[in-house]
Length: 356
Image 1 (cartoon, helix red, strand yellow):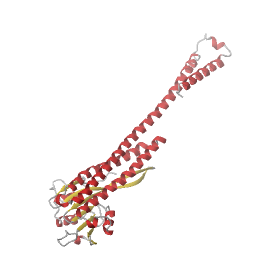
Image 2 (image 1 turned 60 degrees about the vertical axis):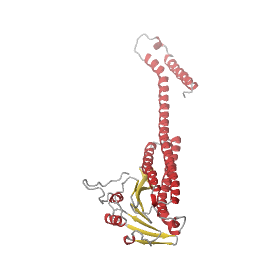
Image 3 (image 1 turned 30 degrees about the horizontal axis):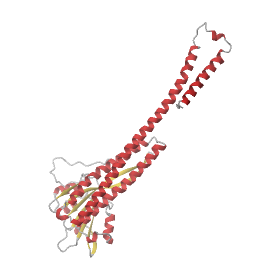
Image 4 (image 1 turned 120 degrees about the horizontal axis):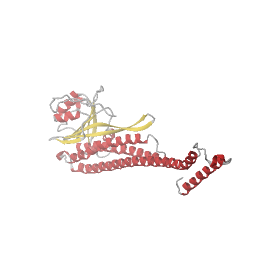
């Protein structure tokens, strides 16, 4: 489904803080999580969303759920010293996935994918929806912006809460890695579902080739195209995170290399699904062509059989006075018998040649 985009008024200076997404009325939710090896605390509200001081926690994660409140986003930008162009990109949910390196922070944009099952005109299809995720990495803090309601980072948040894994012992750079890794895992889930759908369509094409197959193939092809559009920039994004200078430790860079391998695996799976869809279209066209050939073959055989019969019927249908056969009492049955013999001989010949 194509989304309606709000246009930016012409003549405004770059970096102007204007929300460019769909109108929303829900309240922005800000969750501040401070954690380290010794423990974890969570607070809600804008007042707690400040950079950690020298005596602050090992890691402060400020998660903003909703970006439609320009005043709140701008206030956070001032507190964390964000560039006006960063604020502009955060307020535009249609920004392209990318990574930008600033003197004291790293800015990343990625897409969180959701796969919805839709019933439309007796056809079950999938609809890929994307949500913009902004991740900012600074010294000792991570600031994330989620476009809409719902927690795209729930799995990571739960690991941090219960102290499972390395998150409590690592720094803010590892948290940024874990958040991006969670988004990549979602790409695996989406592609697995789409790959299963492609395999199901292949079976239907080989067994029955339903009439709605071309439409369903077109829809899943569009879904794969959207996934590819969101996935390809992730490779550059992770590469920029690896080059994060003093913000990314050597240990976290090892995990980022592994994450790069995961993205390449997703890319290979995506290309395999795209090739399968292309082959599925070829299979559909081949089956349709084969059926058309079978129909043409039957019509040709019928026309060939009736050609001599039509000749005989036309010959004796002429109104000539001197036609000896017209005076013979057995002429009509004899002509019918000859027609049957000719038709039988042609059918036998076609069957022996394997045409029937």
